[in-house]
Image (cartoon, rainbow, N blue to C red; front, top):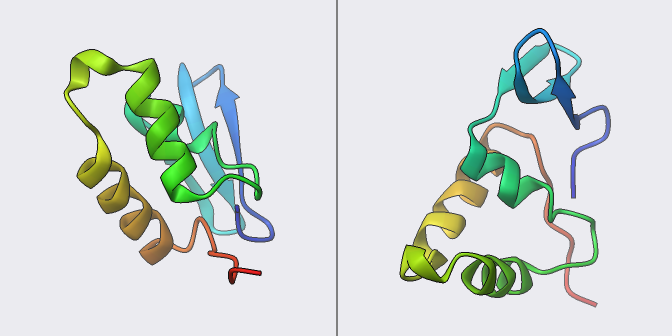
Length: 85
């Protein structure tokens, strides 16, 4: 889920989606936007990977790319991981 104070939105002036946070903003490419649009606090990373593999079969599997993206997004403090129930 997104960290408190962080959110994604389409920014008309940038003509792309961005992550807004207290210190500024980060522009997102299309791949990052597709991934982050699925972050809802309910889906697991595995669910997100499955959905993206179904949506984009021509990519030939996005597993490692999505895992790498989430690791980077977490390092940037955009998202937090929930503990399993």
